[in-house]
Length: 289
Image (cartoon, rainbow, N blue to C red; front, side):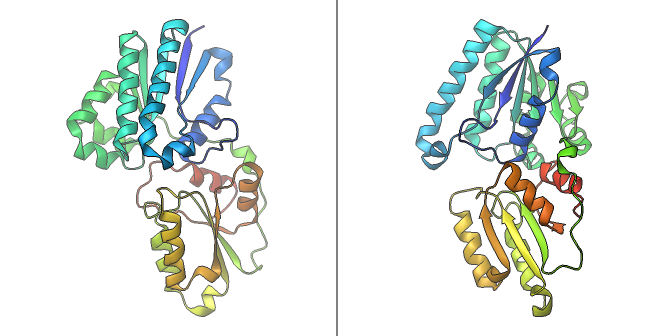
C-alpha cells in the first residue's frame, strides 16, 4: 500500500478551522482515501497566538520542518501532497518551498495543490520563482482551467492538472424558507475584510432606498482576515448607516454554521479575488440563490 503524506491545515483540539483550504482538507481526509493508501497528516494549521505575535511564526515553521523530517526519514512516504496558497504573506510561501525541497532530498514525489485566491497576480509578479517551483514538482493541482492555461506558458502542461473543489453536498439538504417572510435574510460567509468585498457590499446596501433596506438583514459570518479589519468594517458599516440592518457574528462552525444556511434566503460573496470558493458550493447545496 502506497504511503501519502498530506501537508496542510486542519482543525485540531479547541482550534476550529475556517477557510476554503481547511474545509477542503478536512473533506478530503473524510473520504475513503485511507482505505486505499496509508495516509499521514502534517497539520500546518497556525494557532491564533502565532498570528498575533508574528515574531514567533518562524519558530512554528521550525516545528513543521522537524515533523516533516520525521515523516520523511521514519515513515518514508511515496508522495507528499502539499496544500498551499499564494504569497499573501511571503513566509507561508517560503515555508511550502522548504517542504518541497526536503521532500525532493528524500526522493519523495511532490504534488503541489494550489488553493490561493490571487494566484494569477502572484504568478504575473513572480513568474520566474513561481515557474521554477511548479516545474520542480512532479504534479501540480489547480482549481480552474483558466489557471492551467495561464501557467502553461512557463510550466510543463503535463504537470498541471485541474481538479475543482468539492464538498459533501448531502450535508446541506435544506428546504427553502417562506419567501414571504420579512426581513429577507442575506448571508455572507467569509473572511471579514476588503479582499472579500465586504466594504463594497456595505456601500452597495447603503445606496438602496430606505423602503428596501427596511426589508432586508445582512448576517456576516467569519473572522477578520487581517488584524484590525473587523473594527474597520464595523466602523464603515456604522458610517454608511447600515449597521442597524447587519450583524457581525464572528466565525461559527459545525451545526451553528449549518443553521445560518438553513435560515437564510440569499447568499452573497462579492470577493475581489476568488479561486473556487467552498462557501459557494455550500450555499448552492443549501438551495440558496
